[in-house]
Length: 267
Image (cartoon, rainbow, N blue to C red; front, side, top):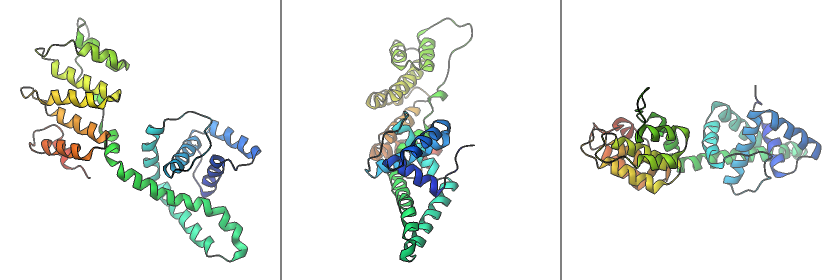
């Protein structure tokens, strides 16, 4: 079981990140980080919190992904454990501040930890500003794209492209799917895979252009998926105006793909 978060652990992490932890304690702490995945995650969270306030901290002795960790931070800090801890920190800060001078050391001990509670608030503000991007991450799932690979079938451009996509070779997948002619009945599905590949490659404009082409295929029964996919990309870009434009189109017809999801979207 990983390390449980306490005020003391937060303070120790804070000292480690600020470089004020004594050298012998630092070595022991880094050993704990290497052995405890939960503690390692907490260190990343605290570092991200400081970065959101523009406070520089020491480099970490391991690699991590800045962008993907933002959602981890949000989910962590919205948990019941962190809500209770935040309240405890705030209470400790208020009580210590109101104590007589002889309890100054007590106040100093918890002052930094109490300040982290303030950072919690900053983070929640940050998350609310990026709720569109978070919604993108919560809803995008390219593994749900239709599969047309069947056992014993002869190889063709679509099956080859699908296999390349599933292997994560998105550039070659795009090249292969682009060989499929617009007259092919699988052409609309190839556009889905091409757009998804561009999304994973973070080539957002090309993804939008591809999904725009998909939505224009009015003879294709599932063309409205193009509107939904475009809306997700605009969310990823935090482009609220364009996102609302796509949402309005989706809500213009109850038969459109993910109509209910778009309708229930809380902005």
